[in-house]
Amino acid sequence: MLQIQSPLVSVEWLHEHLEAQNLIVLDATIPKVSGDVSYDSGELIPKSRFFDIKTKFSDVNAEFPNTLPSIKQFQDEARKLGVNRNSPIVAYDKHGIYSSARAWWLFKYFGHENVAVLDGGFPEWKECGFDIEQQYFIDFEEGNFFATEHKELMTNFEGIKEYSHDKDALIIDARAKKRFSGEVPEPRKGLRSGTIPNSKNLPYTDLLINKKFRSVSELKEIFEDVNFEQNHLVFSCGSGITACNLALAATLAGYDKLTVYDGSWTEYGSLTKSFLDTPNWSKDELIAYILLYASHSDLKEDNHERNVIISKVDMQTFQKIHDEFSNDNDFQSIQKILASIERHNYSKEKLEELLVDIKALFFADGDFDIREHLMLLFLKRILK
Image 1 (cartoon, one colour):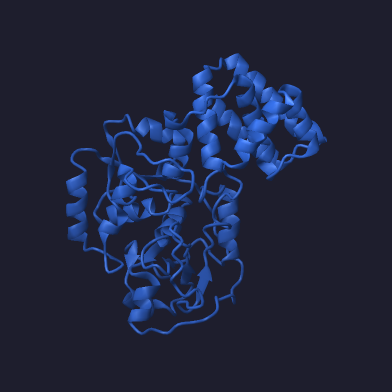
Image 2 (cartoon, one colour):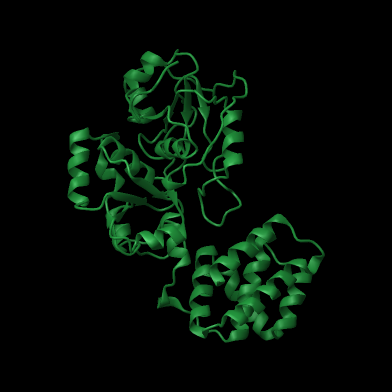
């Protein structure tokens, strides 16, 4: 059985081993958040299977993009791709180096070590003149992959707050310098700019040259310049994708105590308060806004939910807040709710009463579906 010795392999290595028994080649391409879709989605490395990060290998019911899937979801989807317990896996993407390391890190998180990223990805493969296919490979049986979680490889919102005060840990942000400094807005509309406290910036693109990783000696120098004393490196980015490129580069450079912040700035920037745009709402207006936000867990409030909201506030307040809410996106809504809760200094008892009202809203139509359940859990999290 082929054992991959490095987390990064060359296109020459893949070309040489393409016919190896049980080798699985995964196309882990996603569009860049900037909207770049310049790659040709119809061209593939032979024997490629599609590793669908956005839907199959993320929790699509979560509030934020690219959220870590459950162990069952990952195991089931990996088996559908024909992955076995001992399968050698090479992941690539069509940008060169962008999202393929997310696939590599997910497999490591779920206990599979025989996995690597293709250095230079599809552009390097094509540049070398190797064969190209037009269709994904589908002639395989379901695999027997068994997932086990290695929770130290990922952290969440509560964890990153602890790491930001941990003298033995260093948070490194993979976003571009001007995004990190706030000189340019975040590409996700409505998401505020900013940085996680006590973090440093190392754009993942600084680790690359011609869409390939720099040499190991160069990577060591880069990390030595950023990291002086901490032995635990925690990586963040926009939404958990390019942070994995930092994790891969750090692995190549010899670091082994590594963690990726799954939600990254999209989660942190949404769940921490920015007081620059705090709306000047009354308490009734705030209640109306929160109830409207909750009712849109299934995209639009129905008449039952509308009546519940109107029973709590007058029609004029409802209409005013409804108009404002209609112009906000999710990121803006979360920021406004957090800032206004802080401004009104809600007690724990008042927040509990508000959550009771939210639950009553969800039961207004006689049903409590999965989207409403997930929304209630999310609101409990941000209102506590």
